[in-house]
Amino acid sequence: MNCPKCDKTLEPDRHGQLIFDGQVWCDQCHCYDARLLATRPFKELETWAQRLCRAFGQEPVYLRRDPDYLPDPRKYWNGATFLLGEAYHEPRCIMLYPPGHQLMSLCHELAHLFTGQDHTEAWARNFATLVAWVKMRL
Image (tube, rainbow, N blue to C red; front, side, top):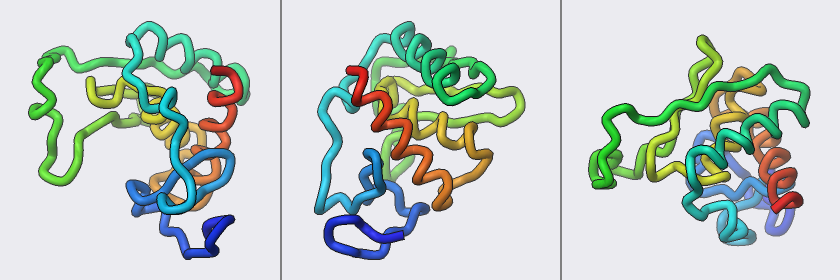
């Protein structure tokens, strides 16, 4: 998989250096629409998850939030980056942590559930498709 603009080889497992928006781009050639990175109310994210599941013919996904929520983001820092969310295949749910209450994080985790894969090329392409779908509807 290569960046469509500069042809740089892209590694899906290094997803922090990639932009998923219709296609998979390197972070030097493309950037996310700020609306995808904006913090959103949890209820709004639940609505987006329902819409995405219906639009892509997927079974519903349950969204959870941290029951021990703390407004201090340091709780979600793992030494290299913030923990934004986690996808659980069984049960079919996503845990979104407060730093990840954004559409980009939701699409990232949904791509894991929709493909059943970790950070692979299929996951990356699905993530890019989900982001593009959401962006068109903002």
